[in-house]
Image 1 (tube, rainbow, N blue to C red):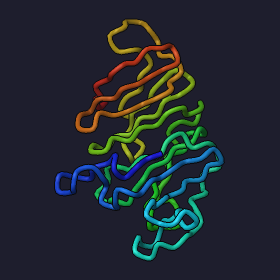
Image 2 (cartoon, rainbow, N blue to C red):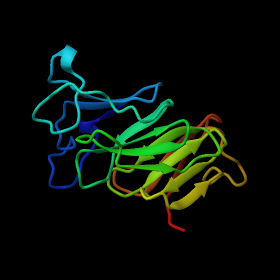
Image 3 (tube, rainbow, N blue to C red):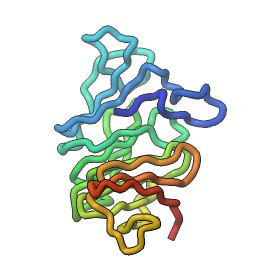
Amino acid sequence: FATAWDYVQNDSTAPGFSGIGPDVVVGGYDDGTVKVFDLRLHEQRGVVHRRGWGRRQKEPMFTEQKDWIVDVSYTHSPSRYEIVSGSVRGDIRFWDLRMSRSIRTLEIQRSSIMTALACHPRIPLLASGSNANFIKVCTPDGDTLQVIRHHEKLQGRRLGRVSSLSFHPNKPLLAAGATDDIISIYGVTGK
C-alpha cells in the first residue's frame, strides 16, 4: 500500500501528505489490479480514482498489469496524482490517477522475478530488487544507473534474494534487505 500521507510533493505542500489529501490510500493486489481508496467515502463507495477527485465516482480499478503487484508508490513527479506500480513480471507502470490507462510502461527487469520496488519521493530514481540476487537502480525513463550485486562494506559477499527496498526521504541513499539476513545501505550514483 502507498498512502498519501507518506509522500511530500515539495516544500510548498503541507508536510505529511501528497496534496491529494491524507485520506487517500493506493493498493496493489496479487491479480495485478491497483485500487485507490478515499477513506472519507462510505465503505461501499470507497474505491475511487480518475477524472477528478471532486466527483467521487466509483470506477473500475487499474487492471493493465496481470501479475502480483510488488509495490505501489507516489512518484517524484510534479503531478501529485502520479503513482508507479511494479509487478513480479518486471513491468513498471506509471499512472495518473485521473486517467483511465497507464501513462507509460518500463520493462526494466525481464530476466528474473521482481521481488521489490522503491521510488524516491524527491529524486527521479527507481530501484527494483530481484530473486536473482541483484538490485537495479534506474531513472523513471528506464536508464540504468547502477546494478548492485554485492553487499556494501562486505567485500565479495553477494546479495541474497532481495526482499525489500526503501529510499531515504531526502538523500540518494537506498536501504536493501535480502533473504540472507543482511541489510545494506547504498549511496546511489550515476554511471
